[in-house]
Length: 234
Image (cartoon, rainbow, N blue to C red; front, side):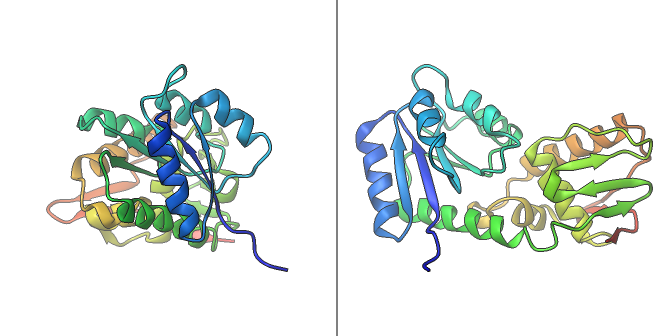
């Protein structure tokens, strides 16, 4: 029996761009299908299990950010595309749980590299994800996307929060630079993006603090961040 090839769903309203992306991915040994809007995507997704969604921000009807929000927590990574160069737009996409973000126009070779990086990460991150991690009374179950506070309450987490916490628990006690955290949580090929990492760490800290926990993440001035607690896995 042959292994199933990864299926990429491309949501892009420009027919020529969508067809070019789909054709390029197919020529590089990936399955790919296209949809021009969120309605067409929902119809496709109902009958096909996607491994990655390439999603344009500017769509007719429901926009890409709204669709990305709907996909958050589904377990399907999202690579967002946008002709907008605004940093705020990029940050919003990442905070909604997008795995990566690529500005138009782009080299198709870069798109392919990012697609493959996301697919590799999605596979490699599964190693050890079935473990239950415990630290300072907290219980983290990555495969169930669940974090329980010391009082037993369930802490609401975005996909970005979960990726960041997963990076920290795997490297507890180590000082992780912004570049290293970028590599662990997204595709590092685009280079460091300090503000996005700082915002992601700040958001995770806030969620943990709101759940009544003591500070768990130290800032090491000039070097990065360190997850303070001792972590056990079972």
